[in-house]
Image (cartoon, rainbow, N blue to C red; front, top):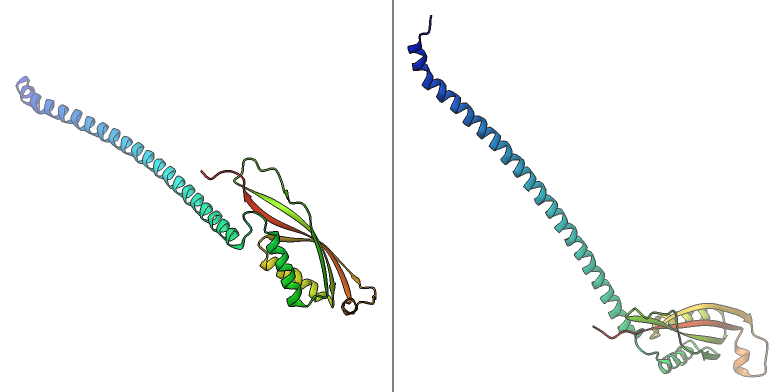
Length: 200
């Protein structure tokens, strides 16, 4: 079949429409690819932002938990009397009460000068130590353990036993002294925490 110029004129319009439709289809495909890339970029940006927000949220929750834990610890320290000024009169009464309860035959003690454990100029609270030398006359070793345990449990301070020495008691004429079988000499630290910076 031979195409004439008249036939070509008749086909020109459909061919032109076909070319235009192909160009439009190509433009639409290219536009949709651009939209897909833009959507992927926006999705990646949103995911990155969401991950950063979740990370910040986790950090805030961790910090919040740390603050709660510290507040709880501070409250416990305040309730136990560890924070604030040292209470030597209370400590001396406690020592006498424990001596009476456990029927310790003899007790001598001496508190040293309170001193800061370390320089804490930039912290809200600082720890202070009051050293104590303790001498006890005991019936048996368990009395020493019970005595120290009760001090640590009931004192309005954090009491640390640094060392203790036990030795047999030499026989003497005093009736109370003859009851004791052992002598104990201990060094203790009574720790208290005190606010050093004003509250904000």
